[in-house]
Each structure stands twice: as structure tokens, then as C-alpha cells.
Length: 281
Image 1 (tube, rainbow, N blue to C red):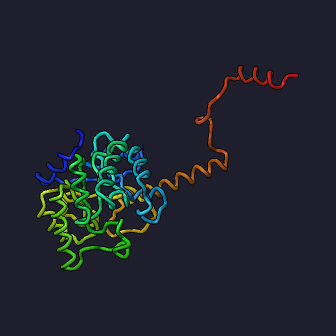
Image 2: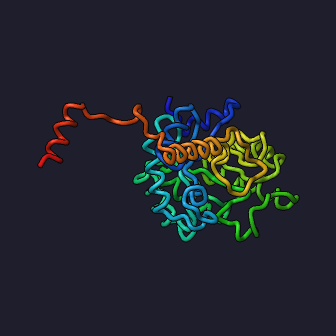
């Protein structure tokens, strides 16, 4: 059954856990979608894992539209969310509505995700009024890593924890239908989860959240970037992929690939006629 925004609401209501993963291309999205996952996020993390950027700040609307379109073609059952990249919504409410609309209309997304709290409530409210579902994102917000002084756990003091809790309530009031909590103490995530009516999606925020999301490159061992405490490798496709590529190279060098099984043949009669035409004087 097709997952919708109501899937998230019902999960919160009934106490069912939500599972989400990132995807950035058609074939991967199609594979993940076939596993009956609740949601797929086209994250701006594509900047690092797909485009080789050092962080997410260089990701553009063109990048997000390109990858969202590709993912949308592979999604049939999951609910598709797309990240709004850096500076696509910070400057004005108008920009945020236009760019969110592009991700829906041109990209094929069903919702958008924005990083930030009180500072972007006007943008969230504007997008929601435009009939576009919005996911919030608090805690470690990668687009703000320069302000944080790096990728650090947030909400570790009483004051900073209270601030995040208060911000979660403000985002709920602004109209977000779900809230990503990244790299905050599990106790703080638990408090937020128990005190708001919308589902929380954790990434480095403990098991008390209503759901979890991870980058699929990380859970499959496909990315050699910086390891994070919260990310778990559920399979190592990277090692298998490397072994397969090395085997291919070795067989090409030895001349054992392609063999008869993987080659096409011409009939001996036609081959003889061809040679006569080519080489007869």
C-alpha cells in the first residue's frame, strides 16, 4: 500500500516505529522501495556521498532537482521527501515557497525538509499554506555546521537541551508533520517525542524516537567518509563490490572474460562468405 503523510500520523498514534533511508538515484530508490520502507529522503547528503563535496553547503537546487527526479521514478510505495538545500529557503518566505514548489512539481517529491527552528518558522508556515507537507530538522543541522564549529552533538547542557525542546514545540505549532532529531542525547529526544503530537525521526538520537533514518551508503559500507557513533553497518556491500571489480579486472587482463558464454557468434557459413568478400582478390 502506498505510504502517505497519514502513514506517519497513524504510526505516531498507534505507537508503530517508522523506518526511513536516503536514496539519490533511480535504481537504488527502486530497490529500497521494494522493501516496504515507510519513507525515502533525497538528502542533501548527496553532496558528500554522490558529488564529492566536503559538506552539504555546496549542494544546489539544480542538484536536488536532478536527484529527486531520478529517485521519484523508482518510488512506488514509499513516501518521498526531499531536502531543501542551503540558501534555497533562508533568504525569504517567497524563495522558500517557490523552491519547495519546484521540488514537488518538477522533482516529484511529496514533502520537503528544512533545517532550523524559530528562525525559519515564517518559511515553514508559508510552505504549509501552499499545501506542501514539511518535515522539520533540529539538533545537529549540517547546513549550520560552521555556526556550531563542526559536527558536534547538540543539546548536551541544560540550557541547550531546553532550547531544542522548546524549538520542537514551536515547529509543531508552525505545521511540520514530522521532525528529524539529529545528534542529540537520547534522553532529550525521548522528552521531545513524548511531548509533541507529531512523529520524531531520529538519526543519532536514540531508540525513543518514533522512527529512524540513516544514509544508505553508511548502512551498506559504501562510503569511506567519517564514521559516526550512531551509524551502524548492516551489510558491507562495499567490500563485495570492490572484490567484484577486482575480479573483473583480473579476468580481462588474463583474457578469460569474455568467454563463449558471454559472447555472440556468427554462423560458420556466413563467416566464410564474409571472409571471401573481404579478402578475395
